[in-house]
Image 1 (cartoon, rainbow, N blue to C red):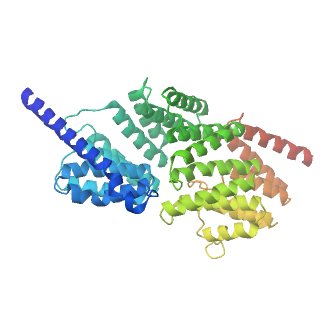
Image 2: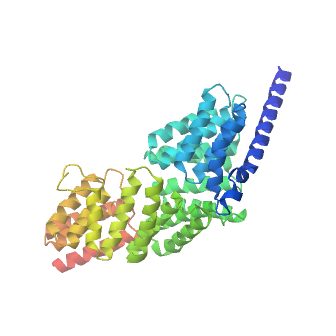
Image 3: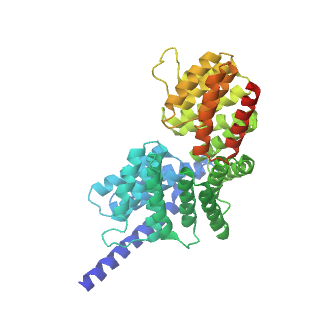
Amino acid sequence: AARDAERAAREKADDRLRQADALTAFMSGIITMAQPDEKGLDVTVVDALRFADAAIEDNFGAHPENELAIRSSLGRLYVELGLQDDAADCLESALAILAGGVEDDETESSILFNLSQLALRRDDVEKAVALAEKAIPLHGGSAGETDPARLASLLDGLATAVSRRRDQARALQLSGEAMRLVAGRDTMGAAVITNNYGRRLNSLGRYTEGEARGREALQIVERIGRSDTPQYAFMLHELARCLSLQGRREEALPMRRDALALAKKHLPAEHINVAALAIPLAQLLQREGDFEESLRLAEDALAIFLKTLPPGNPNIAACRVEVALSLIGLDRLDEAEEIALELWRPAEAPDEPPVAGVVALHADLAEKRQDLEGAIELRRLALGLRAERYSGGGRHPVELRTALARTLRRAGRLEEAATEFEAALAEHEAELGAGHPDTIALRRLIDGVSEAAR
């Protein structure tokens, strides 16, 4: 039995070596396949990959194990480059090879994990969770040779999908399991998992712990000399988010700028993650009153989303909201209203409002045009919708009630305004904390309103 196991392990190692050799030879020939002599030096890496993709079956159709390894690796590259359609086609082709009789649990685990990441980018959360849950038990293959770092990455991916389903407690548990597997390691993978654990803590309002984990992740990356990378940019982004949630926006702003600059340096210009980092910077600049720059960033992000996301993806609508809010800040109301009406026409579909952020946008426009009663009605509607996922406006959901209270005060409905202000203060204290700068500012505003009323 021992000899059989040893022989099986040797055969598996030989298979892996042959696959690695085939992959190396194939990838080294990608530029040749892209025909730079004919196309000139303007040929891109993406062009080369697509030429390679088209040539896979001709080169490896008779060797399905090698074709599987190459399609799996190429699919992962497409995911990292943000080429979602190419990634889906390549990874689904790899799964078809497995369905055709090739057995490779570890590669199947990797393919399913990458498809899970792809599903998340397409906002298909349930599919992402199902794929990640299926990938984990396949890790290690029939021999059960588990790699702790790889298992930690799979658990972390599942945690990300679960958190998008708003099961933050389970997401934190999964992240904690991943953290234990990489404890004490100075690797990029360990840094990513540490950063994501901090993100889960932030989502639960445990900002002090989340900030500590975020800074720990950055320190790991700095120790291994990898701070000039996209991963470092995303970690800066998360730490900036944590600081913003604590009301420390002056500290967050330069981090947001550095994160976006680093992403632009290393990622393709139209990569979806460039847009994802531009939006929170635009939101922060809106709060600082810099509407010119926030508009430019939001419009750039929208152009990327329109090219990379399928029609109807909620991130597109959320980005349109940011463009419109910046236009309102610049008093370009007609342009903002055009966007708002593209997202929802209250007169035509009063009983089918979208998410709270879009309704709040209509309320902002109504108030800007001095239609205070219309704005109040819309703000109440936004409050009723806020149990849904909030997308747009760059404002924390607790600010919806504060906005309603302010509009009621402007309309002279002071008793209603006082009630809403008190409710807003209770929500701020519960969700942000009594010492949060926004809570303190709101308390001062209420005291000022009460003083004026007396």
